[in-house]
Amino acid sequence: MTGWILSIVGTVLTITLTEVMLPEGKTAKFIKGVISLMVIYVVIAPIPAIMQSKIDINSFFDFSSSSYESDSEFIGIIKEDKQSALTAELNAAFADRGLSATATIILDGGYDVERVLLSATAEDLEEAYQLTVNALAVKEEKIVINEVFT
Image (cartoon, rainbow, N blue to C red):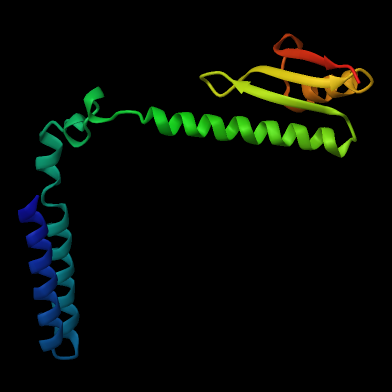
């Protein structure tokens, strides 16, 4: 591979020097044609050798499990950020509608909603419940209700 790259570099340098010294006219066109054929040869020369050899993709990439490791602390931070963002969005939706309700969202390991802890007054409970189901697209059994009596 290194020899091939050196051949290309040498050919480029030779072409540059030759073109500088070439006179104008028919001879220059002929020599440029010959040089073009030489460039094509240099570029495609290693292809037969590449086709005959077996290329092992695994030699380029290390797919063994020891070559990478997950950063569980970073993954935990991402999960907490997503939980906080979803909780804030849902609580903002409650506030926009004037509901006396708050929610806390708990995610599972796959970042899906595992449980929603919903607290609301008796008069706002049904609307807050429906808003939670629609906004998060969760099954109703994942919502835990804490009715606040005021």
